Length: 491
Image (cartoon, rainbow, N blue to C red; front, side):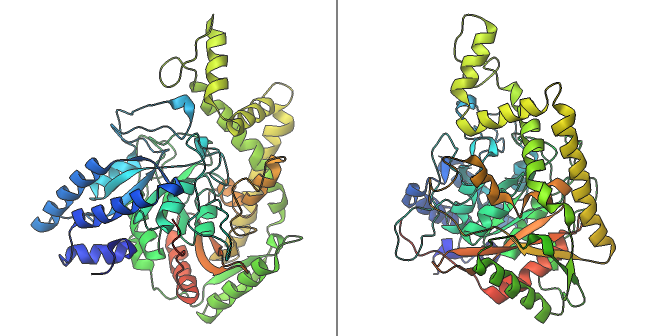
């Protein structure tokens, strides 16, 4: 029998349906893989007993012919999603050993469809980071390494645990969240597929908030088809989330293999950055050629306000974060540091509970929202955001079906190599991804090639609102042309 952990989610679904193996066998294979890969630090909480119980339940439903679309499939859950009875910390000391008494909407929908929870995955603290180095549980390792080097690389962030676990074959798919690129950048760094759906496509209820107008959940998986299967279960209207959109969820998997002939693909000139590595430029051209060969039409487009996206994002996101994180005060739950009065209790708790990056962003956010600076910074950033959204709307109004760009400005880098002296160096990793969040659009990252050191690189496709199917069809073309990559095992 093939090693069960090397199957795609679609292959595992067929094997379970054909009774080639059981969900319990599939789950045990992944639990063993997790144990053997603890050096990657991808999981912050393993739930083997719960996983086996869920697997047995799935096997019983499969035997009765009553199986859901994800019956028996073992998944990892980012530690930002509330899981009833299972510790949820957002990888921050301030949440301590918080155990929710409720289930996030997205995870409840996955369990409804029969999926199995292997455990909780590492992420940057409160999802603030581009390398998964800010977690209170320590950094996550990327299963990929540079050729001839033993340097441990970052898996990207904030969903680094999700991307690392999927790439290292520790789970068949994972939940993730994307506020400025936190699904797409880690996917590109690990040769996995990550889709950030349209804002409002997936419920945010029960997910620890970072920046509420930008956060959106989505899956990281091993293939385009797998990500389509997961998104179908994750998406849908939720009355508990006022930003959730009440429109039907299509069968995303049906979009896989659909012809892309006649589709108009925009190539934005503003994404050709000064000093962009030649291999990124070459990969981008190669991706365009693959889509052209499949019958798509390439057109050059302009997104003139792109250059303002990163500075505007790093005003809007910290502003919303400072507001969202005000609730962590040591009074009701989580860490509590004593003080001689309530003010000192707040100060001591937050100083001890929040890491350096979270403190930095809370202070930036508080500053830009303060009297005298609100109009100069926050209000102007929101106006820029409107212009960025209009740039995309203008392109789509001219018949563009999707936009092709690089996913990241480089391949994965070593732990501790960036952002130490200058945090802006780390923020620049989000240069190709933040525009999508600012405009609320869907975006997918698909593995597309390797750099000179053998590290994976990804391309990004940006779609019209709620037209994720187009991205799956185009992503499949790139995946078929590029092939799939897996890292050489060293752990």
